[in-house]
Length: 243
Ligand code: C5P
Image (cartoon, rainbow, N blue to C red; front, side, top):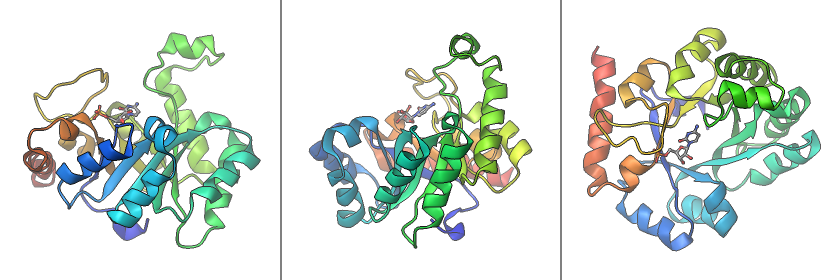
């Protein structure tokens, strides 16, 4: 991932939320070619392993957001970061709650790689956690405080960016400045089906709040016509730059 890859408007990452290679190929066949980025998460990676990375990178020439949310001792996480190189992975996630030494080890491992190095993103507080859940695991901060504190910790230790709900984007941008790559899921077209998502936003809202990448799953995956949905996503973002 080069600085030039970060466009003025956020780039869309398709969430490849399927559990087999053939289902992934079906999705790829329906998606517009111009979509360059695909997110591989725990389910798909656990189901099919690195074959999915080869398929996306070698067969389709796509960039990969590997969302494995690594969380282990520093040595193990650093080794996993090195193992990810060479598979066309542009973005890779780690848990910020792994702590300073783990974050720095991951960042150092990525820096030590050549041109295939993935950029690292930290996950702060999962959106499934409420203040009471944090309390249960010994965290006295509110969710918003925890997101900002762990976001700062990650960036201070060499992590390139964060996964953030649209609702936390503006505060993170304000605190951390322009440099971190901010990646936001929970994107819906105005009036679109929300599903199980809690903190949704339209593309334009997320763009205005400072997102660099938008992760879009069901709005594209379940669309009768993904080309038409992509056009609407882009048109919505366009309103931002016109405003
Ligand atoms: O289908 P939808 O657009 O809601 O998919 C969003 C994607 O982003 C899914 O892969 C989901 O797991 C992921 N995600 C999310 N919210 C988070 C973290 C990840 O929706 N807080």
